[in-house]
Image (cartoon, rainbow, N blue to C red):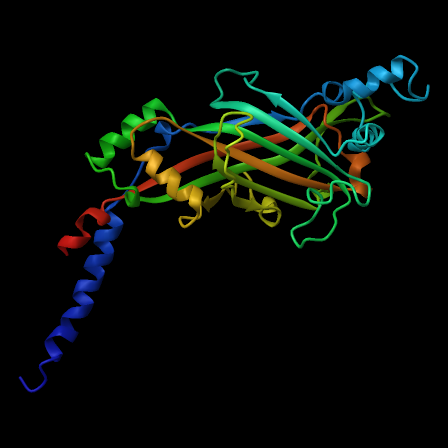
Length: 310
């Protein structure tokens, strides 16, 4: 043969599709009915519980008579006012157990951060560019049972005795709903409807991290962002959106190792919301919350176990 490279070059297109097919065929997704489907309304904490101490002062005559004794219908502007009176940067709320015990959730924690006074809470009141933010920040974390006992058994069966974390090809969250709602009662008609308040936000981020015990002083922040505000308008039941967890993040590497052990896995799902000063009166905590509907997806690849033999 005059050209000894001709045969390998002719055979190259034959082998490439075969390798691509092998990789596609080697990916196995854990059935969705084996992984908990997260569908719930994550309500904001009761305002009176959050700032009740300040309201008690009002009732004892230590506050101006014009102050209300309840903030059930109050806005974030009222909450910020109460926190400013007490000289506080942050108030926290904890709920170890959910109202619905069937939900795969536990240990809800909410921080309300007062960014209303220049020079106060400076480290907690910077935007993503390091500039001062003025308004109120709502930071919420809740622990989610990503891998239940049933899912762990299914993963062990699917992996056929393998426990290489690199076999977890993808971890995704498929959102069909991610909305921020509150009740609105029309003063003219008395009818109550649900309104979307996402346009009142100036910043939003949803992500995941390690689920540490509440108050653990050794907790390491490995939060990994997934959904930014610019994607919220694209999510709907008719147009669900998939978001892959960054496979190179520290949390992703730890999560893959935990999944292949065949045990239950809890993760923290966090949300960070910025409401600027001019929109505080439009956001009420009572009767409001985050309406979520997402399906975790775990894809296992067997290519990792046969690559060395190709």
